[in-house]
Length: 114
Image (cartoon, rainbow, N blue to C red; front, side):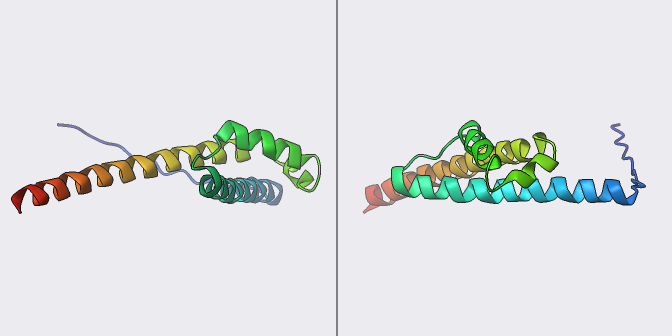
């Protein structure tokens, strides 16, 4: 018999900590959406998309200029968001390749029947 336990934890944050959490979430959301736009644009132009490392390097350059507010949060927030974006892209493309393989297989089977 397998017993799975779950734990519920409640954070009791003060106002300063709440603000810090919201800033980190906002930075991660911004980095993910910014990276997604960059990946889509690059894929449409070249058929390839930049890696999380490439995007992070570009984001670091932008941080020194117009995105200086990203210095208010840990570097890990946008960095991890870009890694998550890479994983999402890989999962999506793996799913597409599986669907394409099934579609080609189905069509070849149907063509052989006719």
